[in-house]
Every structure is written in C-alpha cells, then in structure tokens.
Length: 404
Figure: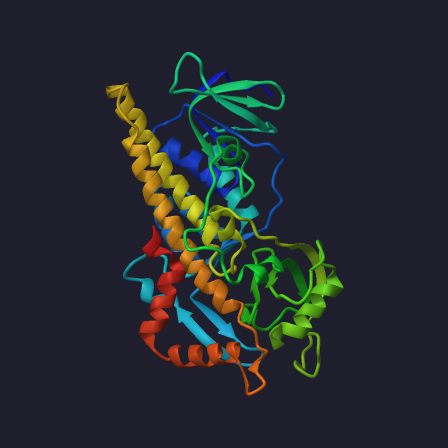
C-alpha cells in the first residue's frame, strides 16, 4: 500500500499504546497523522487488568471507556491465597472517592485492540500495514522534519514520530534511545526469566476462577479461558510449554480449585484445551522490564497507554505553539518527557516490590531455622490484611491512581 510522502505525526505500532495515541490525536483536533505497523493483525491475548482506574478516567477523553467496559470482567478485589486458604485480600471499594471505576478490569489485549480498532474505524482512520521502518534521518531542508524510510523503499517525512512498536522497538533502537534502571538490577530478575504463561480452558470449570498461590495466578478471561503465570529458579522452562507440562505445574503449585489431584480437590479439574503458551524472557530496558515483572496489574501496558494520552496532548499543544512561534523551543515536549520518565521509575519501583515478594522461596531458611522466608511473608500478609488501611493502600498501589 502506498504511503503519503508527508505527515505531521507518524505513529509506528498498532497495539494498545499506538491506537490510544492515534485516538487521542484525533480527539485533540490533530488529523494529519499516519499510523503504520510492520506485521499482520495481532493475535496476542495478554491481559490489561487492575491498574485500569486511571486509564478509564483518561480514556473518557477518547470516548473508548464504554466499549471496553462492555467487554471486560470487573473484579471488586484482589486475593492472595495459599493452596487451601486466603492469605490477603485488597478490596477496591476504598477507591470510590478517587475514581468512578472502583474495580479491577480484566480484558485480553486482543479484545482491547479490537475495541480501540473499532473506534478508529468509526473515525475512518486506516492502519497502514505491513510497513517496517528501517531507517530515520534528519531532513536536509528542514531540521524539524525527520525522513523515515521503510523496507519497501518508501519514505515519509514527519514532524513528530511516536514509537509504539513494542518491547523491541525499532524506532527506539534506530534513535539510539537506551534506558537504565537507576536502582540497579532487580534481585528477582532470575526468577522472572523462568516465567511461563498460558491460556487454557478447564473441564469442569473451576469453582473459584481467581486465585493466587506463590508465583501462580489464574483468572477468568472473556472467552472462558484462564491466564496462568508461574515463575521459578530451578530449571529452564520449554519455549512453548505443552498441555501436560502446564498441568503438572498446576498440580504441583496451583490452588486446590484447579488441580487434577483428587486428594486435594474432591471435584478434580483438568486442562481441556491449551489455547496458547510461552516462556517469558527478561529484557534490560526499563520499558521492557515493566512487562516482565510480576503480572499483577499489567503495570507496563497501563503505563504505556497513559503515556500515549499525555504525549499526544503535549504534541498538539506543541503544534499550536509552533504555529504561533516557529522558532520556539521544545520546552513542552521536554516537560512531558521528564514527567513520564519519573512515572516510569515509580512504576518500576512498584513492580520491583511485587517481584521481590513473589520470588521468595518456601525452602527452609537454614538448618537451624526450619522456617521459610515465604512462610514469614504469608504470616505478615495475613496479619496486615486485617487492617483496612493496609488493604486500601494496596488497592491504591494496584490502581495506579497515584502514578497518573
């Protein structure tokens, strides 16, 4: 497909962040944009969940809330359990005074993309695909414009470029934009390298579809499948874990409500279909690390979509300011860059805390102390969970309302 030679804004990537950026541009009156993606339509099913509260508030500005809420499952709380009993519960009722959406939102990424994509279609916005960016350089005649070249030989001259092309961003790589974690490497990084995720269906359906035990989480998805995540340090996980492998993980580490062991559950549950499975590997960049840390809250995706909205608001302001004063500086863009970078570091810190807590082992601490660190964590959580103020603080952290 032929691309235009010039555009004000080039959006690279058609995932949740890229589509959100495009919708936000249209909402703020900027219609001179082009949206490209290098591959065919996505079939991903990653979830966006409990950190949705700020997104719902911000998405009101792009008129996408109702469509997403109609396709999502709403949960009023977040539970941590052992195989047989509840350890901790954070209820989102305490967020009513801060948000019109006091609940966790469970929706697969492909459904999120579908809803946002339908909104794009209603605005007659087309996604240009497949077009892979291979180079960028400053325009020889106008230093404010960048020439973006594609694999098929086409070139677009753009004033602004939004790189929303995922963890291994081509735009970021070409631009030489590196990231480093200011607090050093994460102590739980090795555990998260071993993370396994899978979408499965059960027969019969579990009685309690949302549980969390140690490193294992399971929750209902829109299509009646369940997302499972498990991390450990002992051995390397297969690239695409089989149905039998996932079943063994569940029987060994999972909550009683989804085990096939009749000694643990008089109503055994077995995997019926393995829809999708993978092994996650960690990355070194900050933006990538958020995605590979503990999966509570989908903090990385939520952060990316909030960034898209704030960035496009700043771009439209900068366009207007440049029209009035072509020689003006880029203070508007620099301010938003600094602010969003600070939010990214806050999110990193939050996910690091969750990662460290999740990676504590149940092995005895020492021969002279037959008590594991993870057992002590569980005991502390049981005690703290009895205080409303602690539940409210955890709910606030998961919501992301303090990291808008």
